[in-house]
Length: 344
Ligand SMILES: Cc1c2[nH]c(c1CCC(=O)O)Cc1[nH]c(c(CCC(=O)O)c1C)Cc1[nH]c(c(CCC(=O)O)c1C)Cc1[nH]c(c(C)c1CCC(=O)O)C2
Image: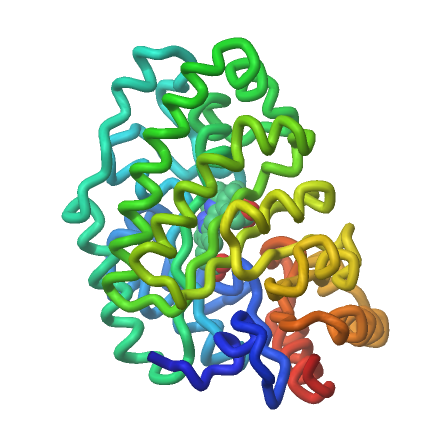
């Protein structure tokens, strides 16, 4: 266990000698070495090859000097492993062959067994052996965000069919989420057993919901996932993140997170006040700012660190994933600057 890591210390709100930083989607298309390695292999196939997963996960750690690695995978990997017909289309995202819109379709989703994601366990083992003191973050998609892909059949702006199912057939909605809880818990348990040092639950699209609907239809299922992780690994940091969730931060914290991620819309001091003194915060540079001239980017990084200074633990990150057109040198420069500033 890399208990001395600054990343884990900040997650636990312990004092740090420098502020830890990593980037959501730090592995991926912004890195030429990633594009080269991925050539000719589909996204889902890449996720099933432990050597390739390990190499892609390590690329940003080597190149950027970040304080944590995140397992190269995708939120739909456990769905595919459980038998859901899903493809990840370049430039589009996950596409589901048969969208799930009624009780029969929900019943047809099979549970996930650990041996169906044995390749993930193998990837984690390869990585923890290579990473030394650098922590590896495991992750999964939260039930709402996974359900949205399953119900819509692909990416959606409005999540209209998902909301219609949630409100129009709540028993079908909850049954779907319960299946997704089982799959997600199993997927995270495999990662924890294989040696990840923290987990992040991505509820990327939860920000589309009102707080009342989030608390009623979504939070209990995310809480079931996070409490199952806490039951097997009480000290493992549990990061919970979504885009546009300023109004949901207290509810997302209460769902069982120890670290809450905020996007750029919510100043970090406000995010910290919203989640309370017992939780660390992660964020929240707008990924678009990485395309701006350095003096602009530098000022933003300094502002965010200043806003993070009052919090009991600040993990520097973006407010969402790295954009493919990002210059990796800009990312490396941000890491250098965050490390040079006094820690929170
Ligand atoms: C919503 C979501 C998905 N996947 C994920 C989320 C939650 C995080 C978020 O909100 O961004 C999670 C994810 N997907 C991927 C990671 C890698 C780990 C990392 O470095 O952060 C993580 C953490 C790899 C990936 N997942 C995907 C890619 C691109 C695949 C490629 O290289 O062609 C990567 C590197 C595909 C994918 N998968 C998904 C999308 C929207 C896309 C992008 C579609 C596109 O623009 O091509 C679904």
